[in-house]
Image (cartoon, rainbow, N blue to C red):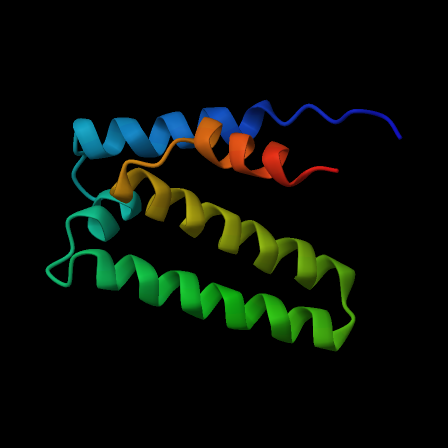
Length: 99
């Protein structure tokens, strides 16, 4: 299996983190991070995207699975930034589980 360049994850995480530290008007990320509901708004989005990903898998439509999974990963990254969790911490945990 060929290794895929996954630097987009680091790039996207960096953009989300920058939006948290340097808010930008009309930014979707900022609207989530600064929502009056706080973390609950981000969790609602994670839940919504999880359900949409499940439904896409059930439909068997590959393009929908990729699209909805991308939304889910994006919103998980927003949640990580909001909670101060780094991608390195996630990678470390996954490495611990590797047998």
